[in-house]
Image (tube, rainbow, N blue to C red; front, top):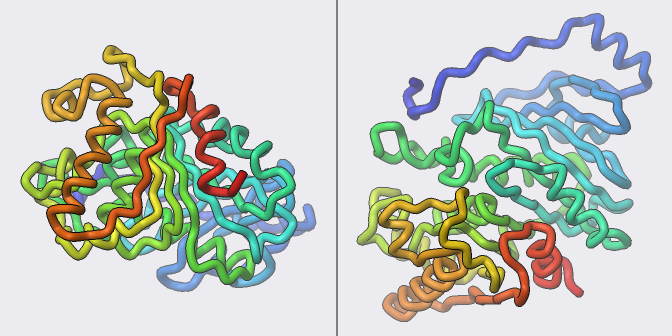
Length: 331
């Protein structure tokens, strides 16, 4: 195990020189060697994989190919170096001025399916969709995805700069630089395990640039309660009342499928602390919102969160995405 409690990972092989020559022959642009501390990216579009390590903003556009679908491989920097996230993109014509929407998939990490959900909803809109795929190979199990690598294997907190949630913030910076944009923030949607990721990002990274968030059908939650151990509460992680004030002031929608009421769902955590939140996802979402409302009153904070129930929908990421679109990109 490494110092942060992660498994050691194999070093990645550098690109052979002859492959660079083939890339040039294919008409692709090669950027300069990345500067120290810069995230590394590999762009892929229209079946061509440049397989080049580049620094965002180092030259012509390297990440986002517009318009339409594409993908690229993103490797974060700093304490998160050594991992890779494939990012599936749906881009408009004018990426520099587009609304940036990050979509976090559920436990299957099926990013391409989630991109397919949003493609018809953003058609004709100036919205740049980024769907990161946190593959099991680099982010094994819920500990490194839903729970953000917050805890070490001994149950103590990792340094916050190694938390997985920070990858989304680095990705946002890289994409803005790549498209030559001036976006100050991004919107974010998460369903199921992705909703777990999103609400914890907002609660544990108070300096995040999220402007609007929708968390849909999470299986269970981290309650805004410092009397309960993380991950079911905030005890044991570096947070305080100031952070809760910032989190509660965010525009966040807790979106719940009215029919997401299966108490025996195989993908839903069934231990005692999770069951204390309710027998099924709908009940647990209601508990989470009420807990936040109570905490806001207790501390005298404003709560900008909204609770929305979607009639006739169970645990369906496509239908919940359609319901979320009204809050993230408009009717």
